[in-house]
Image (cartoon, rainbow, N blue to C red; front, side, top):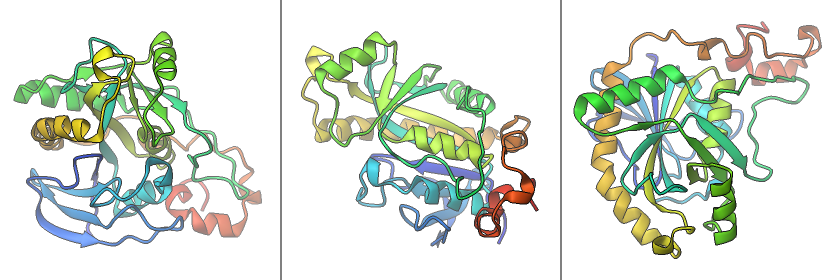
Length: 286
């Protein structure tokens, strides 16, 4: 099958990609189980793209139920080198208003017990994650917004909470005191696994509401969140399409993230683990 270099993960409210032609539905098998849904492969702005609805079509999967490993591995199996991940978020600062679009450059983990690595079973790997977002990909998305007149804010910290309930007011105020910018439930694990898979990753964060710290948003409902998402969906899809149009060859370090991250003696890696992870490690452990 022809390589698919660009992946798009759609979050709440973004269950399909407008403008995707020559579509083909693919059910991808992985060593980690099934992805959230079949992947839709097609042409977007003349480039081969794979689209995945993060929570499944019909929004059937809780954030804590997501098979993040299968989702990212399926992208890798198709040959994806870059992932643009659209995600609904709440705002923890007055300056980040509903309908804003942000490209955060940091993550802070408040999840509990989620699996966020492909490795283990006799293979120890510690990837560098100081800068969890591909700066080059983030810059491309910001430039795309500038070109089409869609304002995009670059930078800020995405706090990843467990969910599925929204924050308490006490939690929200603590996160604000820590200097966090936005809050969501999914993107940290995606970013970690994309780094391990040597895939560039960036979040397109769609601000739906002020988190419950804000007096006017202390009882936000799903209906309100979806209403704002629907308003922002057209801009988000325009931004993704223009970003895809601008993407050229990779020149960042994401494609060699494992080069100095493997700690285990190559001769001691169990054969079963080598076979299971061959797609990820064959450059380094034949």
